Length: 121
Image (tube, rainbow, N blue to C red):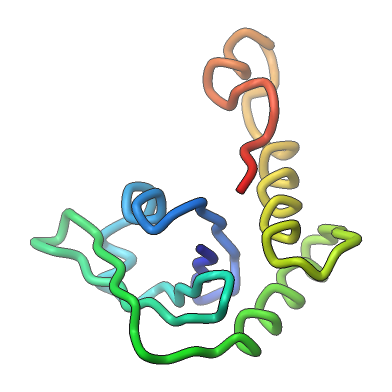
């Protein structure tokens, strides 16, 4: 799942449940996000009771919006991917975020917080 905020920052999640558990309810209530799956299906976000976030698939498919947003994001942040495969692009975004993680030192703390390698889809 690819979730974009108003500034087109891209968050990449391996599942809808992962996205629901990692985003801010206040941002969902402020209509901050556009969420699409790898096929371009648009998801609607709702913050139940201002706490729990739920994504619901809609009947809207917009793969071109997904491609355009990803192209703008990867270009702006100089994220390179040799493939046009959306899963590989998502993995490249995850790897770039992992490389930019904090803290990196001490290593034991970095491994505990971020694992020893980037997440993958």
